[in-house]
Length: 290
Image (cartoon, rainbow, N blue to C red):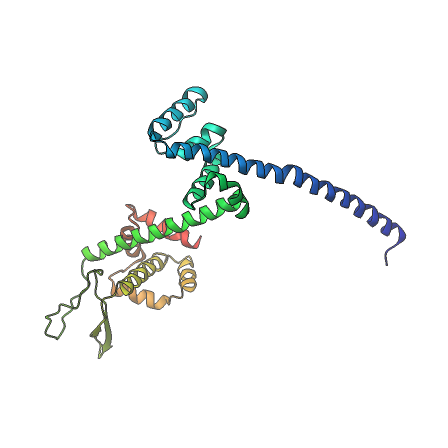
């Protein structure tokens, strides 16, 4: 049970905390909230300048002169690929690269969303503030980068396998003389085979589908990534568990594809990733489980 002294201390601390809390509320209202709202309005003004430049018939001329003034007045050098938005923000704020990047991204995002300078302040508030807008932009950019990277790797895989030394021959006992059904949007055919009396027999070919081929190429890359980690450190087992792969099946898959050692899988990834050095390919794979 609390003593009278403890209750008195608690009351004093609670009163002091309440006073500080009230002061904090005033601070947030007067400084933080007001400062944010003022910043949103300034960003709207920056966007208005950008709009004037975008709508002019001499954007290139204006950009050239902005770049010159930045260099001559403030010794600020800019790259040739710096966007008009970033140049305007740099000219107005003369801030750090990170600040310019953040502000310019918010303005460009609003432009892409069809938001005008007159609507920008409310747009930012509705999204939860500049940081929230920036996080969503970064997330969207990351998704685009990953998507583009996946397309590049699939194109690399297709090219490599098309030009790769074949691992065997296939003869079909039908009137097509071994030429299976093709389709304009696929480069490969997919066959079903089974082992009978120690012999692999092709029992059917699959309707040519780009979706199936894409899945097959993705699975080929995933199998290579798993095999490339088989270095005795435990990463191979960890990777297989994470992606639902059977380690024994991966080893048999390696033999089927003439991969005697882990380095053979690393070299395959070198082609898939488009990386010149095999060790860089191995390092790239290791990042997946870092």
